[in-house]
Length: 134
Image 1 (cartoon, rainbow, N blue to C red):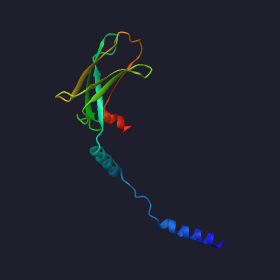
Image 2: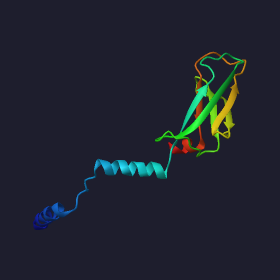
Image 3: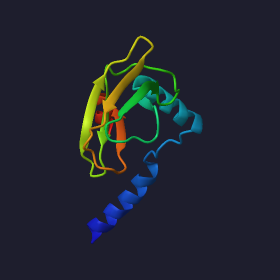
């Protein structure tokens, strides 16, 4: 019993003298976030398509460009952009791999098969870098 009481007294004397976390200001947090984004920039893709509805046998034309996620300034971190046409069951119908032109834009097309069933399909655009981010 004596050892327990002595241990509790010792703990009560030592714990208040331990240093606590330092208070971090809002400016420090924002500057650290900006530093993190500058050291490890993230890319974001914007994709434009030529129309909103397609029929089997049509060709889906698209243009994509890559920007920095925080500043929206055009960047070129990845060499290739992958664009996929995905059906409602999450199965890839077609995938294209494209390189940028001299203006740092990605142009391409996906031919829609004649035998494709009707429904809401998705167009996914990504880079390898984006796959490893998550």
